[in-house]
Image 1 (tube, rainbow, N blue to C red):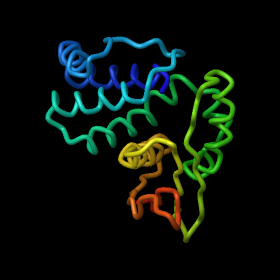
Image 2: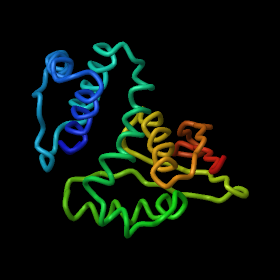
Image 3: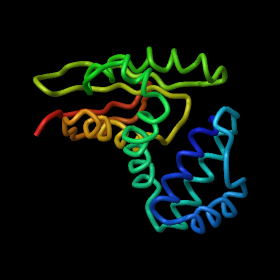
Image 4: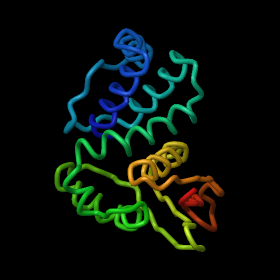
Length: 181
């Protein structure tokens, strides 16, 4: 993953628990303390940071990933990709529907990017089904937080349920998103 991901995790942890906690996490993960945004790091480095942060902060990895997803939607995306995000849509539905296009634009900045794919289906009034496909495993809690965070970002509360992991019949995670109060 690109350093932008790890650097965002560093920012979140530092805001929540302080710089000393991040230093301990980096040591536990046997990695550097800061990351170059445009440098590609091994996925194992990111997974090691999540495991170390979970242990250091005494937070379950799934919960930490969910929080990170929310942070990504509310802070990292708007701060780093405001122009692209603004061109992607003005609502949870339009942004979700155009995420693959947004990732294609971002790929011009990050040539080694291996982005996930999102397919969105309307399954009822204010109800969406999101299919998430990725070469990376174990990130469903991050996607839950990402979807919840998009709801916050666009002022439309989103209740997200992870209803199915990838399987032989459907090689993607399935999430149900209920928008609104």
